[in-house]
Image (tube, helix red, strand yellow):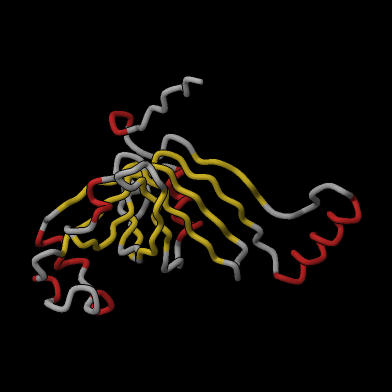
Length: 178
């Protein structure tokens, strides 16, 4: 994934966390309100923190982008990231050309000129992450110490990043009515 220089410390931390991760699980709501997930290969993390993907414009997901979640996982680094935001569809042919990779050819055999090839832009609102930067052996010892102590000990960092998108694009969650 190509990563541009980020404009805020929060976005820089997000870029650091997801950098090098080649697959994300995208979760959307289907037409019946059920959650549906699928693997997606990120192409770019742009300067505003948006993540870009190729998508088939005929896919049902393009109708369900008001609220989305991207989850990244790197078991080797013990880094896990969950990003909440919204999605947008773009059909900029020059941008498609610029981001084109031969790895997309199995899904788009006509290359960047494929009729149904579009861009999915995920605009992040918040991200939650778990990051244990130590070696696997250190993590195993920390887990064992945590079991003995009955509480988490040196298992890594768990935090949230907020205000990742421009103010006018931020998703405002409405309170649930029970």
